[in-house]
Length: 106
Image (tube, rainbow, N blue to C red; front, side, top):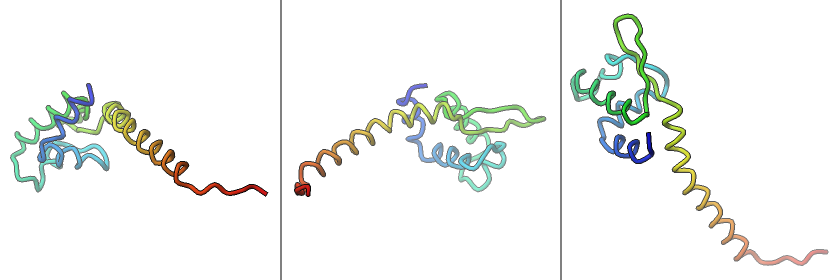
């Protein structure tokens, strides 16, 4: 998975809702689909896209599939996002040092 695939996958609002429903733990398709404005088969297709992007995993549990967020996929996406956070913090730190009044030391 690349972060580009993950971002592309999550750009769909319904797919994002499906993904967000997994934030508290693994769920079967029926529980994920409950209350969404799309059919269960549509939710299954969104889950397939999320799985192909490396963002979710699935496992058989009896006759149903249970889906969970894949920490490896999220980790890759987070590492990509963190580079922007690190750069922003470094820029902020430089600006603080540049604009801080110099205090004389006793």
